[in-house]
Amino acid sequence: MADRPELLPGRPRRQPDPAGRAAVHGAAGRCPHHRGHRLARRDDLAAAGHREPHQDRDPLNRSLLKGPTIMYVTAADGAQIYYQDWGAGRPVVLSHGWPLNSDSWEAQALFLADNGYRVVAHDRRGHGRSTRTWHGNEMDTYADDLAAVLDALDLRDATLVGFSTGGGEVARYIGRHGTGRIAQAVLVSAVPPYMLQGPDNPGGVPVGVFDAIRAGSLADRSQTYRDLADGPFFGNNRPGASVSQGIRDAFWLQSMAAGHRNAYECIAAFSATDFRPDLARFDVPTLVVHGDDDQVVPFEVGGMASAALVENASLLVYPGAPHGITDTHKEQLGDDLLAFLKEYDA
Image (cartoon, rainbow, N blue to C red):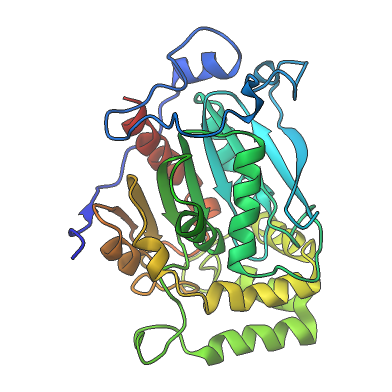
């Protein structure tokens, strides 16, 4: 039986981290790869040619640049996986939600890079700027693509952060590839452990909900994305809610950048994949963050259930928060992620 998850209080608004700002602009600061006492050193990993992290990839010294380095990694089947690479320091790897892309993480990426971390965010295959493959639109391949990014960049002691569908990607990565490269995991409004209602998951979401999303995607996916953004995704259908037109337009724009087949098949990937065996393999410090008014991945189905299955997980509940907290609660989420990262670096 897993231990009861630790409930953490909310944290105050952020204060700038002078050491982090110095590190991202190349000045002296704390050692960016300090390992905490809770995890063993990952010396059993392949040395990946023994190259220094940034030398052969970036002759311009990326740590001196404010903007992201933009590159591609080739997956096992030849698909090109687009990624952005911000800042310098211990790596934080961000996996995005459906049907978005890595731009949906821009607030957290900028904030964490500005506080002394190297932030890598990729576009899932079929989404954003990655290859729109006909095949591979399921969690095993998504996890293997994530592994290809970590391996190609030789990322070690990384913190994996997954939002919504990206949380499933993180869980399946750990289930398939283990935690040899991983120091911490974070699930944000995430789909694990299992969304679909069934005999062994009676509290799940009825399949009719996902069938309606599929039908809307086939009939008029552009309007379906508009309806999600204007309504449940950001909680804009709640009394008194006021989500800016810009935030809702950004959701639509990123969604339309996904391939039609890719986004359609991903609905089954996030709704009908059972991540319970994957969560059982988590053996690193894990933070679960979820809003208790999430209309897309209900709190009881997602965050609360995942935190109960991951041993010694910490659960942060955002009262009244919707699904899309990467935008609606971006400062609070940034502060909570930074505090969790620093627990390992202390």
